[in-house]
Length: 162
Image 1 (cartoon, rainbow, N blue to C red):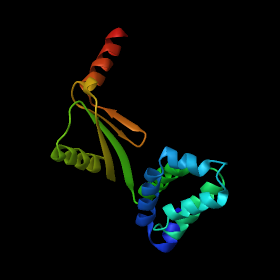
Image 2 (tube, helix red, strand yellow):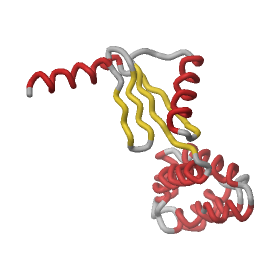
Image 3 (tube, rainbow, N blue to C red):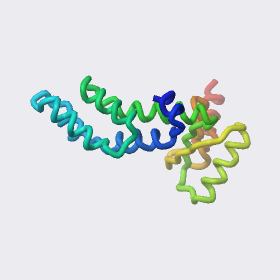
């Protein structure tokens, strides 16, 4: 799918389309499109109507998923496509968990600091976990940095126990 998007030069619209469709197909809609009691022609027509405004390659993908009874794979395909696009563009995905809610300015500062430290652009998501007590836990790709007070206390406890 990424190769097709690169050929058309429309990677951003393919990504937006996949994200939009994976969110739009509710569990009840997916169940209806997978129902063997509904003729395949009607299921194809429903999928075609739902994807009428999407790029042709995306419409073909959804049709194939409906025909092969694999529409439940669409959210995973959308996530994988986004990951490939981010990797191609040199963007790392980070999850930043803090003990308290951050202001937009604090969030921007965290992202800027991570970008400087890693040398790559960062797409960050934020979460709050009061059990951290203070500080933050940052996951960039598969690299975890635990700078929380709870993490430091656990580390100190482990050192004292040994």
